[in-house]
Image (cartoon, rainbow, N blue to C red; front, side):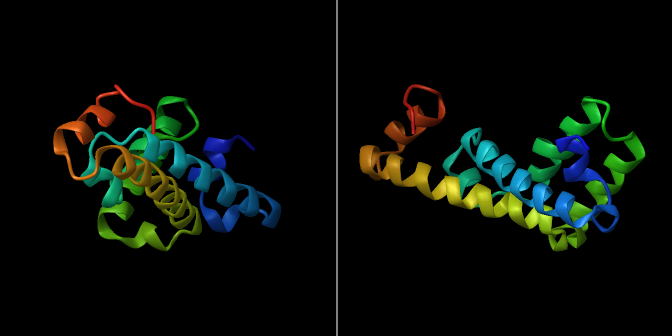
Length: 127
């Protein structure tokens, strides 16, 4: 099964090995998504729709998820039900794990200097 399918197909339909793989892929996707954060606030407080943006929409655009299923994910993420999905939890665990590393690097370099922090997010520096 494709990675995007593992992250978006109904969890209860996945085999145990597929579930384990999905959790690892979810964590990695969260780390990658954190690296794409555009603001300090996004790093600190990613909302539920970050899973929609970084996983669900990508799966839909890649032809691995039908539009109706993508819309269902959107409703579940907005309503909070999707936060019970272990893959979504793994995504946010990975996000926070990487965000802590990035914020630590930014703090070490920029401290509380908002202008210097902004340059990190504009691509002028590597975390």
